[in-house]
Image (cartoon, rainbow, N blue to C red):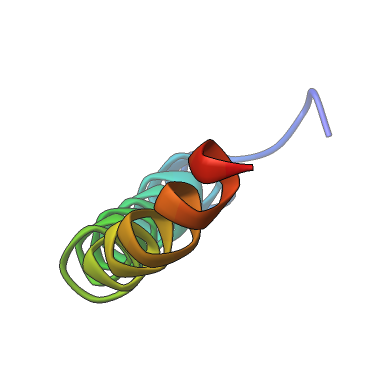
Length: 56
């Protein structure tokens, strides 16, 4: 591994950046999906059931 030629060395440097970009794209798309879809639903449940819990 330490005696790898330049071609495999470049390949070792290219692939982690490629997978890191894919991971970041999935991560931010998941955060946007959670922010725009699940967070309003959570707020609606919190408004409905939180008021009932506060009355008790």
